[in-house]
Amino acid sequence: MERAELVELLSPEGLDLLDSLPAWTGREDVVKTVADLRRRGHSPGLVAAVLTQSRLRARARAKFGEFADRMLFTEPGLEQATRLRVAALHAGRYARAGLRHVADLGCGIGGDALAFAAMDLEVTAADADEVTAAIAAFNLTPFPHAQVLHSAAEDVPLGGIDAAWLDPARRTTAGGTTKRIADAADYSPSLDFAFGLAERMPVGVKLGPGTDRGLVPAGTEAQWVSVDGDVVELAVWTGPLARPGVGRAALVIRGDAAHELVAPADSEDAPVGPLGDYLYEPDGAVIRARLIGDLARANGGWMLSEGIAYLTADREIDSPFARGFRVIERLPADERHLRQALHSRGVGTLEIKKRGVDVDPAALRTRLKLKGDTAATVVLTREEGRHVALLVERL
Image 1 (cartoon, rainbow, N blue to C red):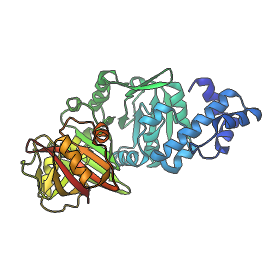
Image 2: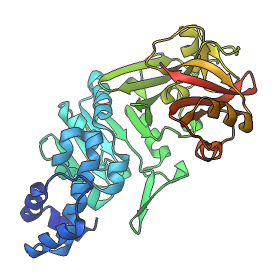
Image 3: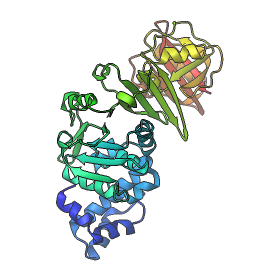
Image 4: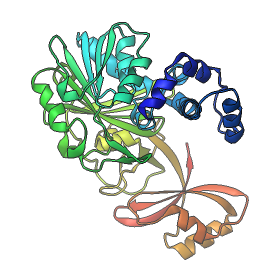
């Protein structure tokens, strides 16, 4: 969004027009809508801005719920914004540690700052991009104890501030296209700056879940978070924000429930053994946190193969940290015999799960030329190093 578009959007006319639009569904006749709004005398820039915001608000409901309908967004800001449920957990850490004034450095559209402010923490938020900072200021308008600065994170005065939260920009936008930054050294602010602040005050840093683990400083708490099966972030906590004795954590949020697996460090893998009656796929946060071994030992399971993130057991395990499957049958691992086995069972719809094998499930599904009325799930993986194909059903 350009500055001129934002000025129009933030005018009384712009905000009234945006709030008057029906909720975006994706089925709109955009050409007709634009024509109708232009006939009513609204400028082309304003029409484009409000329609973009209407579309972004619809997408933002997955992260912000009903609050999205009173917020403004940028495309990259929404992509990187923390889900409100997760942001509330971040804010809770600061509150429990007795930290009352938090600097949100690189605040984006203000998702985490909203959670801090809603927990009655004083917030100084800052973003280096002028348009993004203005949008954050709009989103934080209901909270008089929150202020937003148009400033680089490195230039924010931190006197009187108790702690900092940083969500370094990991995307760039050019020509309307948003791209991920591959090298962590190019994040803004840099990780050197982010973790260097930990020498002055307690700091929390949000990173992508696939961040190189070698970038996580020693002595910090690294917490991977998944929401409804999707690993959404790695949060690194320092000082009193890090829990004593916790170096690795996997926080699993499903619906309204949250469960956590913690350990002082990466857990040692469980022993490898033959396939049992049940197969278990650990949640992605557990895998990222390298706590698979602890999960196996806590539930009487074992690894199916070295280096493969599948567990197996002879009994049904009810755990929020893994999805379970009952093993129905071993099928031929080679493609020709697998196709014959599936055809003989009348399988026409096939879910293919795989770990530790070099196969494209979509391409394989095409080559299998399935016909029939039966749906099935097949797991392609390794058992004690050997390729296997397993017909399973979800628990």
